[in-house]
Image (cartoon, rainbow, N blue to C red; front, side, top):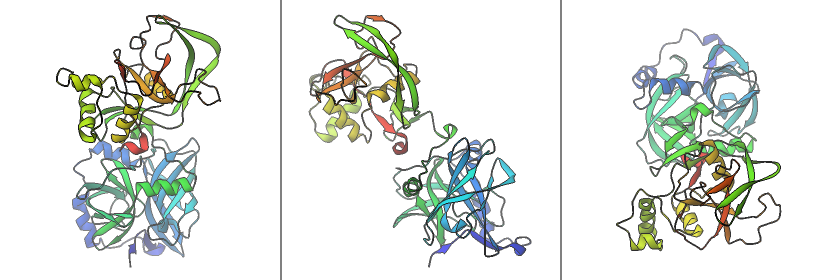
Length: 432
């Protein structure tokens, strides 16, 4: 039988206990090698202590803040930490002397790997953060991991380390000295939450993977959203390509009319805006010749004519040109990413003040062209896809109005033309 741990301690016996031998060994694991002290301090702001009263005993466990709203904090933990107490007590790292009554808003009771979700109504103490869930990291085994919790005989928010063993059925197994009070806490890899600690057996700890945590939260109508400070604004993707974070939200846009001869002007009309519902990462540069050549060599697809006829004379770091829309979609899928919609492209250009733009190539987007951009009717010609770019790349020499990167044009999906390239984006949850 699996041993669950969310320490069950009689109230009258919480003091004066001897330090267990296993806790002595934990002292050797308190300082992880791969996270700096400031990183650990930041992560602790998203870890909470949970105390539940069940049948006259106090159960102590750990929880992870997964979302912060103006009026509430949402926390995920192991179900057995709070099972039997609909209003457990929560303590935040930034305010350790203050206790908050939480409400259990979802629980998978009776399951040794079950989860529970808590809601703490505001005002929430300053300094609390929501930690990001890592939904896609592939576990090979042997990776160093960190976990934070409340082992009974050690200081609160104790930081320990171990190593991943791999998947054991639906759970992550890791080798570590897991103590009572760790249950419900975050299992961290490179500062990201890859799982929620659920139970232990022998010298192995077990954690529910973050992907399953996300599904459970979704079932309880909780959309996890990490705090801005916990999400890198720029980072390298799994393929080594630099990417920039683009946050969800709304930006103003304009109606633009394009005329033959390289002239464009703003069309006066009601205010319009572009809205993104989700965060994403956008590649800082268009896909290069070198990246596309690797795609060709791996998949055997037919390369653009320039790449076929001049493979050695092309700048490997220059943007690939002449690809069709279908080629761009296939590449991004191969790279485990996707082509951006034109709204995503425009918001990325706006949020980065145009720094992602290339003045030599304009770019494919995933959107089918509609003459009236906000028309509810479906596009008549599904082969016409929106292309976007800087005014210079699009050949606009006479722009009337402050049009920056709001000009939109179209190209046929099966045509690969010189000066036409693309870039990929990756949803925030799928990037790691």
